[in-house]
Image (cartoon, rainbow, N blue to C red):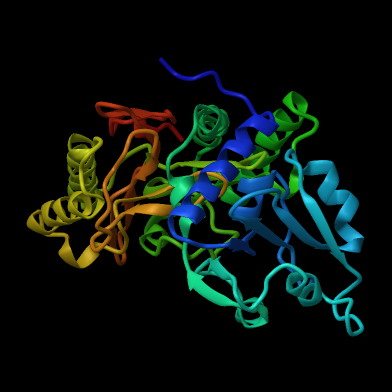
Length: 386
């Protein structure tokens, strides 16, 4: 049974539970503080979202007591309007500022030479160098984010429901001569409007939707969107990418489809992609190694003759972003656990022919998985009438 989907902000209890887990980790690792600069981690631990720019936002979490938010005076009321936990605020005047009024002066008020500080891998060098004490690389917040709470599952499900709606709209609008640019405009507007009508308090900084269609042979280069005025034509393959963030939680839904007919050169790779996808689902359950799943899927595709047409891993996770770890990837030797969320998207990319990829957002359950997105699955359903 699907969880109740919603787009509401977390309450104090939800976010405080994350802070408590982090502080327990700090104590176990004998760290005095954890320093967050990464906006996604700050959002996860406070419900405040910000753009990355020259004025730093820093969330300093002590091993006990209230977190400290170091923020520019310009943004202080904005911060207070969004956060859902009790914080100590340490404002700085501006960037740059006079001696004693900079962000690093406020950081120095709290972090001393004798302290041990956990620091994210993505921490900018300027922030790292400003730290007194001993800085220790640690991504414990990302590790906490990997296991979703019931609240987070409901939030991701809400985004998935929007994407399912948007993907159907995309397919309904597909015909020869149609501009994918116009499809994107229609679908992204549809989903944003629905989100805001259902939750006028949604944070626009953390809300976005994309509905991309890569046309024909161009779909063989999966992240190249240079031909913005390319139109759909009879045949294919055409690869859809419907993804986004709904008030701070992300997901994706993708398919390969055809118009009126499937070209002969597309038949075998399409079926091979589906076979690899079925294998990934057969392997997907708690206790499995993430690297092993990707390895077995890739081995199957190599055995089918597509070893030179593989460009990416089997999947990645979602949460407070629409693309994050953990990863179903060779070399990523971590265990799958219940309440993780992944994309399942083995792909084949053939120059001059195109790309072949499905992607669904999938929840790991205690004994298997459940798809959170829904779209046509069979070739018959994905040959749309022009």
